[in-house]
Length: 385
Image 1: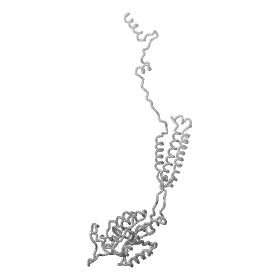
Image 2 (image 1 turned 180 degrees about the vertical axis):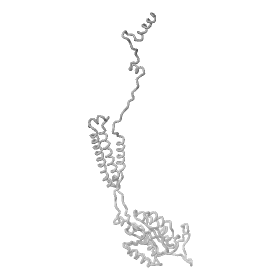
Image 3 (image 1 turned 30 degrees about the vertical axis):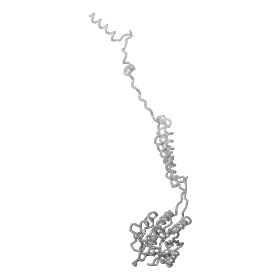
Image 4 (image 1 turned 120 degrees about the vertical axis):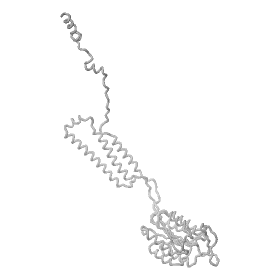
């Protein structure tokens, strides 16, 4: 048995207070009877002795008070275990939305496969918080949220054609991700990770300087490099998402994307600028994001507080129902026994007169009534006159 709020059990001591008040009430009643007169004569005036019934009512009231506080303590019993994921991991996903991400060396395209594997990463890191940065020449973002599905949806609904400025501004994307972490009041106490997914190098700023600043704050940067040195043609994608041709330059030559040795070295330096930073490369038709997800998953298990916890079921309604029954029983039990009144039938009219002596005529000593005996004498007096 487990109690979710055991401090309420101290309230069960109020049952002792209720019992003391009931005892004090009985003692005062006994004193009042003694002050009124002789106890035996006073009891003789009573139709019944309520002492026993009052004792039963008091016991019910005391038990109900104690059981109510047991219910308030929320008794529980264990019914299994569950895995409590770590909640102190903040991940910012910075995804490259440049036009070159339409390349199809990672089928069906780099950007499509990156979105799918980011969605898988969000599902695997249950309990972590996520933010998102979509960038090309300029970044746009989604703040930290415990709703990882919303982050995945934010990235899924965008396409390279939605970016207002073309290019690959990695430094600006890393600075935007750093600002998202800084603005969150809880992130400073959490493990902070930026997952940079890109297929190119930054030719517009100094991403390495930004990465070093981010790493000095204790934030880890993992780099997912999509594409390599092999040139890949860039398809032209229409507003409906379908490929309508191939991108060309002004001279009509096909545009291709490939990562230079300098670009690869730059991405590796960005990862090394932060503690525990990793670089993974796309291979065998995948982007490599799943490797980052597995590394973070192992870290959550070993370092970030993932644990197994007992699951308890509340059973407070059982003592609460018992308390209600005890109170109803206390209300139903009266102090005096129930009296049964019997209505007596009135006597018949003839029987009532007979009982009153009105049904017989008075008789004389000779057996006849005095009225009848006096009448002949009066008649004789009249005849002799």
